[in-house]
Length: 309
Image 1: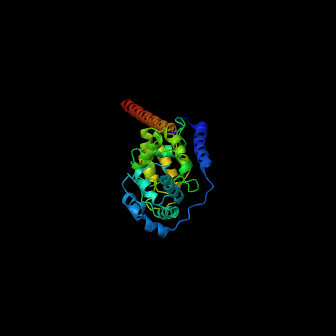
Image 2: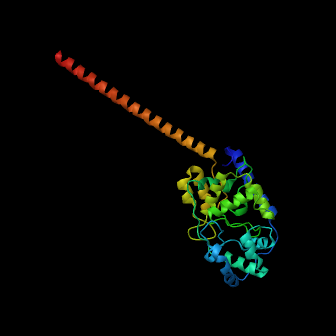
Image 3: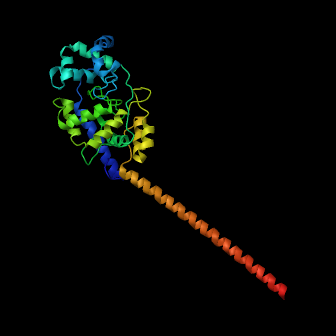
């Protein structure tokens, strides 16, 4: 899903789309302070949220998002958007209507302090999602998701870009489709996502949503993840490289399909050369054996002739 080119051209193209994503995100960063909320007060207020978002914000159903570990500035902003009507959702509009600004800050602080449970990934499509997430797609004009959401999917609190790692794949896919159709629109960061999602196919969305769902570490550590083994086992050369970047929190320097094919061809060529060399050696050994046998036969004939004389 990365540019179908290799060498310096490939590196430059890929880096351009990573940087392009970073430029989009940098332009959206607002110089606003982080949310200062009361975690304990937020815990008390969160009782009304549990029915949809689960205890401590870890809802397993993909119909509603996980809030545990989500950035407090993002949660706070979304609650304000629901209350103002800029973001449309009948359930959340009713829930946010009775919240004060202090309530929203407290809820944001509480859910941000909770630990995210790992999501589930489909290993059949996640490697393709890893390549798209870390490198984008120049042919479609899709920037790397990691430019805004980070190599480990932890988001950007200052810019109010949400954490994606560990989120339900079903929920992520639904939101990407809503951005693509324009059903989710009307505010700054939604406008960014409208432009990104409009070039994503259903297969792209499935792969991306599955990959980021599995980004959450099994340990719950918010600083990284241990997703590399999954990619290495399931994704071949490109998936393995993407998985390594995910595991180390790197910048996604993984192989494109063209790189993978070139690597495979090199391996095949090496195997063929080895077989040819082995065959040649075997042929030489056979020839040497034949010569030795012929010399022995000649010696035997000479001895018989001498005896006869």
